Figure 1 (cartoon, rainbow, N blue to C red):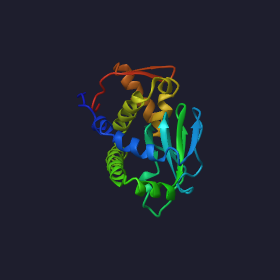
Figure 2: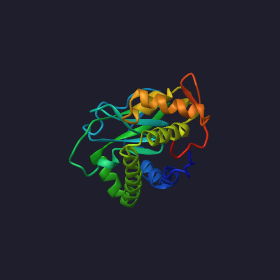
Figure 3: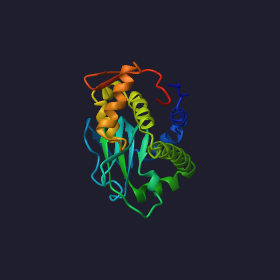
Figure 4: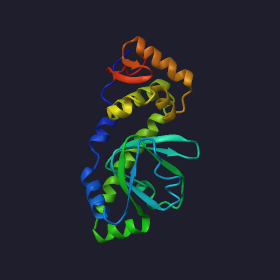
Length: 217
C-alpha cells in the first residue's frame, strides 16, 4: 500500500476566512435572535424554508438534509448556515444538530441583506462564498469518487479533527455511514483491515487514533 500525501482538505480548512466571518458576526450580533443548543439538540426543522441564517459563534454543528437524512458536513464556529443559498430561489429543508454545546444567533434574511449593505460587507460575503464553494467542490469529488476506501479514509480524517469530547462519544462506523452512501458491511470490512494493519485504533466502537493512512489498498 502506498502512503497518501496530506489531503487537500487540510489546505482548504486552513484558508477559512476567519476575519470575514468575524466582521459579519460582529455586525449582526445585536440584531439577531440568540440561541443556545445542548449536545445533540436540533436548531431548526426547516432552516431554508424559514428564511433565516444561523450564525454559529461557538461549538460544532452537523448539517443534515431532511429529504434523505444524509449528513452534508460538520462545521465548527465561526460558521454561517444559509449563505450558500442566499440568492437561490430553490428551497430545501435542513437540520442543524449540535455536536457539543453551541451558541449563536439567527437572523432573518432581509435583515441580513440590510445589515450587509449598511456595513459594506459584500466583500466579506464574497470571500466566504468563494471558500464554501471550494469546500463543497472538494466534498463532491470525494463523495462521487465511487471508491469506498477513499470515502472511509476521508471520514476517518474528518472524525479525528473533531474535538476529543465529541470524537470519544461518536461511534465511528455510524459516523462514516451517515456521511457516505456505503453499506454497513463495506465500512466494517475496511475498518477491520485498517485495524489489522494498525493504521487506526478503535476501542468500544470509538476512534482513538489514526496513523498515516494508506492512499489505497
